[in-house]
Image (cartoon, rainbow, N blue to C red; front, side, top):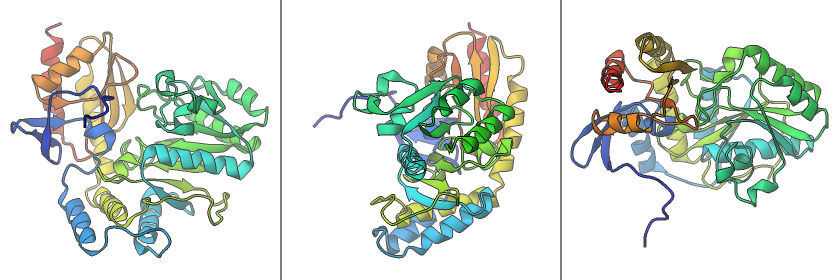
Length: 377
């Protein structure tokens, strides 16, 4: 049987990894500045992470959500303490797309409305309502297009209000730093304006923190810079450091009832053990502070780069926008310098989403290689 050919693949076969390095089947070492789409938060094969999963699978890897699971309670308490999101409720699932599906479904249950408002250049997942709220017609199938979604320019509060006035929108879903779209973000005034409009028009505000959450921006969540309180917060990627896990944090104004949401694998014992180890390491190794410090160093190093238009993003969700398409430059970085980086919908943007354990010496290696290639142009 062949694989369903939907991924354009680089000719690299990783077989092991440690902290910020990945090793292929030819024993070539790669510096990982992309973290497998921002998934690797505390570094590859962190000993505390490996130990947590190994110890748990020896005891109990899985049972259904029909029984007590104290690890879920422990995780909810630890997440509340470290994130500062007091009194929210936790529902666990398996991925970012599933987190956003549950967020949108719950919003619609909560207020009885069915339309969604999302923003241009958004990316919220590849399933059902999540992909309908993603601004990429190439990945929206006809069955998904049945969803009612309005797309608005990021920053345009007037259009947002005109749509909410129609009293049909169950939720606004927003990335406070757009990921796949190209690391664009708006102002505190805009985000606070969204919160005000949502409260006025009985619309749920969903903060999509799938990529930006768990310390990546230097704050636990990207929205926290703007001093707002979302109704629902979706999480995934970095929360499991590679183990498939997602979830939503739900404001106490939204009430639960039996059967409202459900999942087979979500919140399983291994997923909880993985996420608890991530939270422990984030705290013990001060990785959010490190994200701030390395981001400042990165921005200083980037100043004066030839052909650079702008530095985008925040913390270790950061990018370099050039005045030319970067696809060939990325290939040079991978194959000539053995450095993984990311792309975006913006063809001129290199995305940097490394493990939060990254150090200044790793940034130096990247800029040395980057400057060498840019000087050849």
